[in-house]
Structures are given as structure tokens and as C-alpha cells.
Length: 108
Image (cartoon, rainbow, N blue to C red; front, side):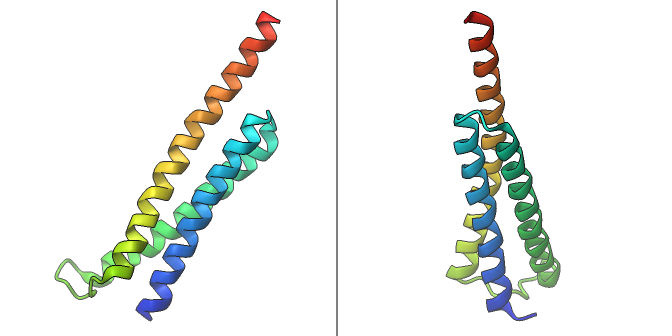
């Protein structure tokens, strides 16, 4: 396993997940539900890809410190956790936007 490439791929996938989650929020603010849903699906796919990389790193470490922990690896882990949280919150906020739009329709 080429650690530098693996860690960079983790950062890239996590960044993509976060970016798509934010785009889903922007689309929801404009009541563009198709785009919002599309971006949430893309965010989920990127987060899964990043999580798969993380899982392979954990497996390679075997719980005994075989994978050297350095600043870039910590940075990658930070990106992944932020992206996963961002995606989960975006999903909830999109639901709220949908509810607000529905209330606006009912209340005129």
C-alpha cells in the first residue's frame, strides 16, 4: 500500500463528500429537490469511498501500530469525520427546507 497515495485519496474523497453535501444545501435553499437529492447521493457515495479507504488503513494497521501516524494522516481523518458530519447535517437541513416549503404552500 502506497501510504501517500492512499491518504491523499482519502482526503480527496472526503472533500468531495463535503462539497456535495454543501451543494445539496444550496439546491435545497432554492427548492431544487432533484439536484439536492442528487448531491446528497453523491455525498454519500464519496463518504463511503473515503470510509472504505479508512477501513483498509485500519486493517493494515492490525491494531498494533503498523501504519505510521503522521500529520497528513491525522488531517485526512479530520477531513473524513467533518465530511461525514456535514453530510448527515445536510440531510437533516434538506428535510427542514422541504417542511418549510410545505408549510408555505399551506399557509399561502
